[in-house]
Image (cartoon, rainbow over all chains, first blue to last red; front, side, top):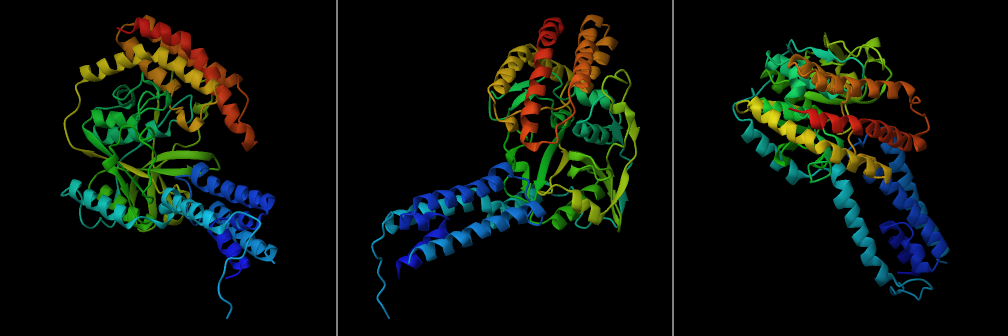
Amino acid sequence: MTRRFVALLLSLLFPGFGHLYLGKYTDALVFIAGAAALWYTIFIKGRYLFDILQPRFLLVAAALAFIYLYSALHAYRQAR
Amino acid sequence: MPTAKLGKSPGLPAKFLILPALIILFSIYWFGLRQFLGSATEYKKDQAYLTAVMAGKLPDNPAPSVKLPVRGYLIPAASGMCMVDAGAGIANYLEPDIDFDDFVLLGTPTLISAARNQSERYGPGGSFTRTFINLGYTPFRGATTPIHPPQNVNMDIAPTNLIYFKTKEEELLYLKRLLTANIVPIVTFTRDPFKPIEGGLFSSLVGYDNTGVWVNVSPPSDLYAPGKHLLELPQRYDPRHLTYDQFFKYWTPDHQLLWFVKTGPRTPEAEIYAVNKRYIQEAPANLRATIDFLKSSGDLREFSAPPDVPVFMVLYRYFKNQGNLALANEYLKLAQTYESLRQSQAPPTPNILLAAEEDRQQYIQMLEAAYQPYLAIAALWP
């Protein structure tokens, strides 16, 4: 298993962790903050109010999925 | 095939990152995703309890259609009275000797909460659920999430009576069984289903057929205009029909429903009066604590802003009928003060970033205007 896959897997666990592993701390901060803000939106601001089929949930869920995938791919490519 | 190895990285070691990442992942699931993924254990527990506690009270299958003669109350001078509108209409149907004023008086019209325990938030604490309890009913809440609002939101509903349903279809079937058994539920909408007015709405659901449901949602009226119609009594109105598609569209995302089951006798009125007398004597201090909370930028989710002017008018009518004109006039003056403040306050801002702070400032203004009157009322209360 190479550094690239380790970075990718860590980022899939939580965005930015792969970048912490790679020493890319600024990138890590951006991804961690972004993912944390989206989770906060869902579970704190939106608690009791989200329906899985409502457009606003789908929008936030899509943004979360994007940030997870992008962070993983970015970490993978940074780890050359 | 190359052997797997963790090469040296300029960053933090992987072994120090894996555990925190797993903890975060688990926390996200436990505190958040559970409400979306559901909880089989919670569902089985709640449904088993519900079956036991409602044994013999509901038919196994609902009637093909039901329409109960439950009417709502259109309440002058204020919006935000949907809970009292819905509850009073149901109470008057189930207990015909209880009119709107009785409904308010049998609750907690004088309570000002100040987060003194787990059951309290800050602010006026008028509880329409308490009226049903005082009438001998047990309240229940259903939702399609296993995570219910905290106790200080459902202050008079026992935690065991917060019931998890898996789907809205399951809840709709349960609603029909309740109505067939002459139990009238309340549902909540994300907005008025009949006109483009945003904001949560409690509504009694009084019937159904093969095309939809009947709900009580107060119609448009100039009775709502602040500063006018203060002395008028609430007016009755009839339910309107929603198709099932419309109902599901506007039902809140957690598909909240409330219902009340007759389980015992009424609380003696003298006991209710004594409780409200204690509340009014504590009110000035609690009002001051609430104002301080709002001024220190307290979380607005910990503040409740329930009925004010209509409750003051009920108390005005009550003490006027009792011959206590001094106290009646204090409540009338308080209602008039609130009305004139509302007329002078700016309309709600469309800027969602500023709306909460604007609400906060308006609440502070209203409560500060109420402080001296509450001192006078507490002193005059017989």
